[in-house]
Image (tube, rainbow, N blue to C red; front, side):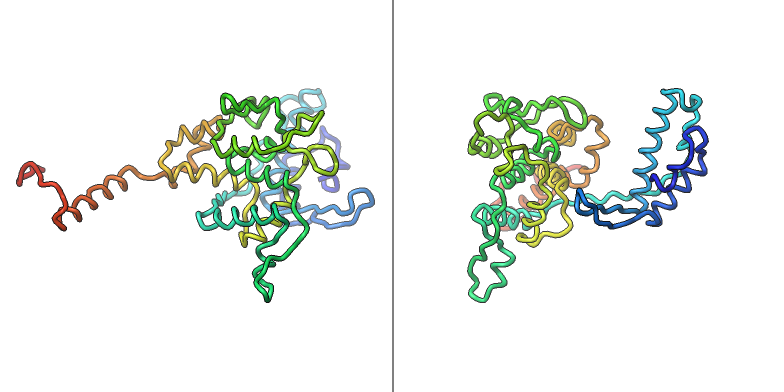
Length: 305
């Protein structure tokens, strides 16, 4: 963003400048992949979705500029700039993928990679660098609670109330919230060893500091489980999809996930088990039973319509 507007004065930037920035970012003009001394590598990506995020950032910056009297009130140049269309694709793990994920997690706890094991001539297990047991536990808790990644990484023992079966998170995307724990989630938390002098639930085994990222362990697990195109955040979607398919109402799913707006939960409506399908199954089962002579006789041979 700096190469595109860095030389312009805050008060002189207009709507056309913002539109130009969005076009440049959308067309990957500013994309780069370069080596750096401190971080090792810096990757800057472009695209239409990134352009929308840049516009949102600029809009916030100019709103602050108005508050700080650097621009006239109501002069935000981002207003009226057309955003690119976004088509959200929700990714849910199927039952088969969940089974493979469970097997891969269990294998990783022992330091094995299922994908490499299947390629060996002997068909035996293939020993690899073991993923951190703490990272694997964090991945399991993500799936069992539907929490956001940041909520799990920042989890502290003082937030865990096993007696009431709750995670009492002081801060989240929607503010303070309570996460209801299932028995499998409780069993997982009980299996964890608390580090002396630390309140962090998921503490790095080498650094002695909280785990800051699960990206690399997750990528290894996905490769081992032969699962493609699944982000960590998709574990949250999978948690909700299992609830919807199991017949839970959207308000209940929204409450479990901590959604502030019902519209956020509405994305799972098409996965909900239909009451009409349940009714059709019940009638079909009864008709087949009657045809086989196992059904109960109806009270009357005539029925009104």
